[in-house]
Each structure stands twice: as C-alpha cells, then as structure tokens.
Length: 230
Image (cartoon, rainbow, N blue to C red):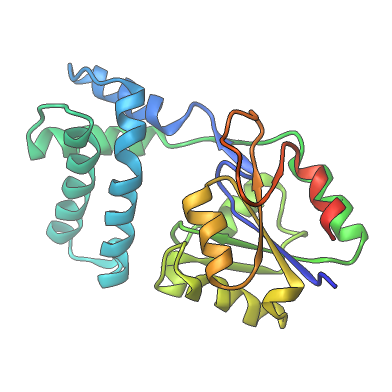
C-alpha cells in the first residue's frame, strides 16, 4: 500500500519562464558574449553539481565576501566556458551577477495543483526531494504548494545529491514510510528514476512531450496519472 508520494520540483511541478538557459544566454548577450541557449543547457548540469558541492563544503552565502565572489566566478565560468564562451573570470562574474539581479521566474505546470489536490483527497502524504539549495520553502510558497507538502528534503540539507540513495532515505525517514510504501515522481531518468531505485522506491517518470525513449519504468504524460498508481 502506498503511503507517501515524493516529487522532484523544477521541471516536474514547475518550469522556469523563460528557461534558465535562455536567461543566461540573453544576459551574456548584454555584455557582447554570444552563446546559444542549447550550449548553456548542456553546461548547466555540471555547473549546478559543482555549485552544490561547494555548498556542501561550506555554505556559500555565509562565506567572506572575497570567497563568496570566488564561488560566483567559478560557477559563472563553468556555465559560460563550458558553453564555449571566451570570457574572463570578471566577465563571468558580471554576467552571473546581472542574471541573478534580474532573477529567475517559474510557473506551475497546469497539471500540478490538480494532481496534488487529488492526492491530498486520498490522504496520501506528499514530499519534495530536490537537488536545490535552501530556498525550497520560499519556492513552495510562491507556487501555492505549501499546504500539500509535509516533507521537504534538499541536497543542501541532506549533503547528498540525487541519484545518491541517502537523500531519498532521509525523505522516507521523515515520512515514516518504507521504500515499498513510496513513489517518487521526477523528469530526469538518470537522477530521478535511478535515484529512486537506488533507495528501493518505485519511480515514475513524467514525460510531458512523449519524446523520450522506451523507458523501463512507469511513464506518465500528466501528473494527474500519478493517482492511478496508488
């Protein structure tokens, strides 16, 4: 019997508008640096993983100013140079600072709230497991999801990224559920499906475009279909 359903956050429940890769590419263009959104998208996973590892080592926002700027430079360089942009460390810092000052906006997928409401109506516990920083409570509040999620586990808090099992195990502990009593819904096979399986949790892959391969897991095109697997 399923007692708990965990969700990834970005690109599962909400999406960036505009996409992060376009935001970074447009910001770089303001500084005369031409890169394609596609190249930025390819560079972001490794840059994000580096940023999280830096946070695990020492919380970036709490560092001395010089050390904080070093981290921002490192992150910006990993995005821009991996996207084949010839930039100096200071240019990378300026572009990143401008992108951050404008900020990143996200929107709910149309199927998110109805799915959460349906699961809540079945008295299913719900939680979020995400490879993001400390801002998850703010994000959930902005999205209108606060009343639906009892458990929130981030890579920053757990000290582990998906697909490592420890982040999922912490969520199970919070839910007082066994792996057999839980589902995890996410949009990335290598992080979400593999990670859930590493912890013994049944994964569900959300593939709204239907453009993926023949996956060896439960695949849905709309979050309303999650309830069919309870």
